[in-house]
Image 1 (cartoon, helix red, strand yellow):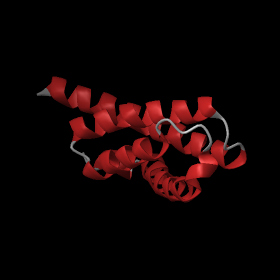
Image 2 (cartoon, one colour):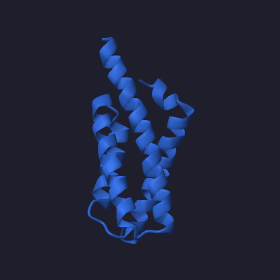
Image 3 (cartoon, one colour):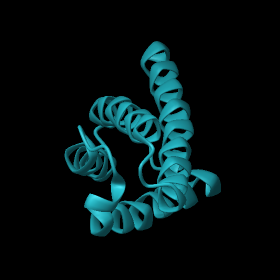
Image 4 (tube, one colour):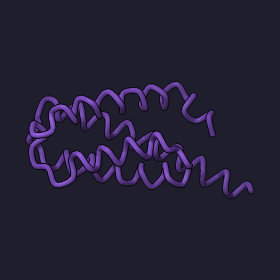
Length: 108
């Protein structure tokens, strides 16, 4: 049982770190929307978050990650997804705030 708890805590820490990374990428894409490396980095991080969220059974985090992946996978310029960019920025801002307050971690 302790091993499961240890894995859960590792996934929580990783998801928290990657959520902040995605938020940072989204903010940078507001300023430079045609950065394909930033888009790819963000999508890859969201994919890892989605896997962790699935393991943690966090449906909200899993859904947000899946939406971000579907919106930006294969996109070369974020301006083509401006509404999606704004929506995801808002959603990940909330997730980062939860992560920073650690109430995000207490729910598990």
